[in-house]
Length: 117
Image 1: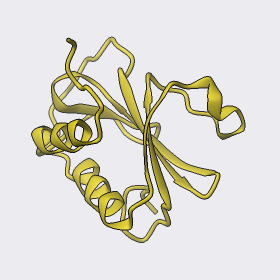
Image 2: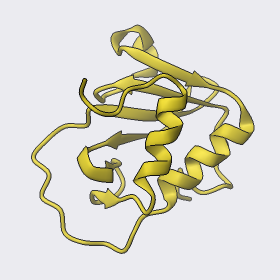
Image 3: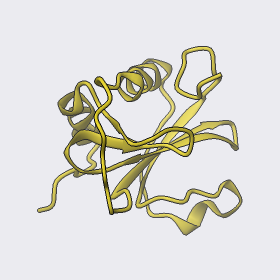
Image 4: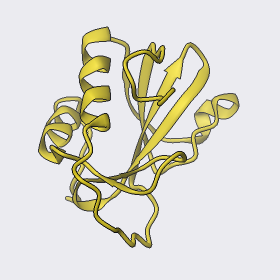
């Protein structure tokens, strides 16, 4: 089952700087936001799962931010955010978000900067 599908249990989202979340070493990543509200979690999961029609990408960069999906302390998935509305998971090619502005708006509402100052 796809980690972003509604049937997968997720109780918490964490937004971290960079990538490489390890639940055994949670303090190793700069934590930018924690979300436990089920409605917000459902909204973000929907935004992440809504990929636009596939187009080839050739990103030569690492994610600047990642959204970590957890069920308790169990890592469900990590979605890395690349530039211009692209995302990366361990289970797929790089994907283009259908509505990157909506995800940016949610991150901004949480106090997470998505654009350089």
